[in-house]
Structure formats: structure tokens, C-alpha cells
Image 1 (cartoon, rainbow, N blue to C red):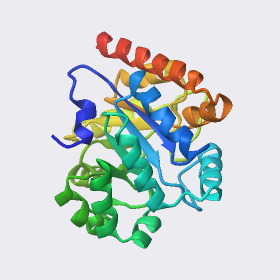
Image 2 (image 1 turned 45 degrees about the vertical axis):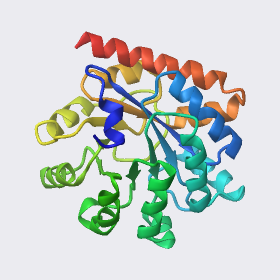
Image 3 (image 1 turned 30 degrees about the horizontal axis):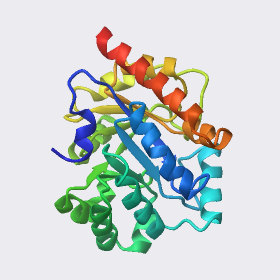
Length: 263
């Protein structure tokens, strides 16, 4: 079983994946929030490597990346942060990064350093699977899952390709847009998941816009997990004690558990 697969190991449990930006609002806050996320029911932590041109991210995460970069965060420091974080938590850790920082670092060195730091998966929004063979060549022999994205606009051919190339889980983008909190879930989301389900051999997790416990519970009725980022990033800034993050994540966990029992 891969490291990422451990997030889906408990039968009937819907996976809760929490996103944080490395170094935002500070390195200390990133380290402090990890145990809070785990304690309140997260199954996997997705840590974003800050990048200067985060095309898939909305204003909240763009601002977090800018602040982290201004504070001196680099991919190498993200590796060290991941290493320190894994000393505090047992849940799997995945990096979210754009491709350019990985190329600049060197794919061989980057994946080797990921393994040494305990990073189990990579999510690279601007790297389609048909262009990801070089990254997979270094990541897969080292046991690192490459997690690819699908959008509601994805063709049947793209769905088949992502299903063949992904490992760990498949990341379903709820909208053809960027990350960010939204008041309602998009129409057609359940139909989108249903279109991918017969082709997929991996868990299907929905992100981009899941902002409340009610929305998480709604998604969990037809998906295997949810990914929540912008709401957590906002709460980390608003409440440095992280008590609000803990309450919010506990509410998400409760909603997912109710949805899992209702199936």
C-alpha cells in the first residue's frame, strides 16, 4: 500500500484532505497546524510549495504563496519543513507544486529528497499526464504517487488517460476555474463524478470550492473524499491560535462521517 493510499484504508470512511501553504502565515504556523489537522480528523495533508505564478489558485492561496515567498520560502525549505512536519504527524503528506520549481530543483534530486522527508505524493496542476512521464520515471520507483487532475470539461479520452496514469487518488476539480471558497457547489458535480467512476480504479476526491461542512457532506455522498484549502488558509490567518481551524476541520470530519454512514 502506498503512503497516499493509507488515507483511504479505513472501509466506509470518507477521506478528508486539508491544504496548507508551506510557510504561511509563517513556518511556525505551518508546523503547528499539522497536529491540529490530524487530531481533528484529516486523513492527508496537502502542502503547497509557493510559486510566483500559481495559475490554478484563487486570490486566497495566491496571497498565501506571495506572503510565503516574501518570507523566503523555497522548495528546499519546503522539503525541510515537510521533514519536520512528519516528525509530528502520522497522516500521509503530499506536495502540491507547479512544474517549474520541480524542474529547477531537478526531478531526480527533488523526488529523492521527498522520499527522505516522508512525502508520499505529488500534485502538479499544470502537468498533464501525457507530459508527466519524466516526473513519473523518478517518482514511481521511489514509491511517490503522482496524482493527476480532471475537470468537468475533461473528455472521455482524458479521463481514461488520467485513470491509467494516476496513483494514490484522482483529483476532481469541481469547476473549470481556480481554487477558492464558494457559496454553492456547481451544478452537475455529481454527474461529473459518475462519469469518471466507471473508468477509475482509484478513489475520487473533489476539491476547488468545497468551503463548508455542509458542502463536504454533500460531496461525500458521491465521492470518496474532499479536499479543502482556501477556508483553512483564511482561518490560519484570522486566528493564530488555530482553535478556529480545529473547530472547522472537526465539523468537516463530522459531516463526512454522517455521509459515510448514510450510504
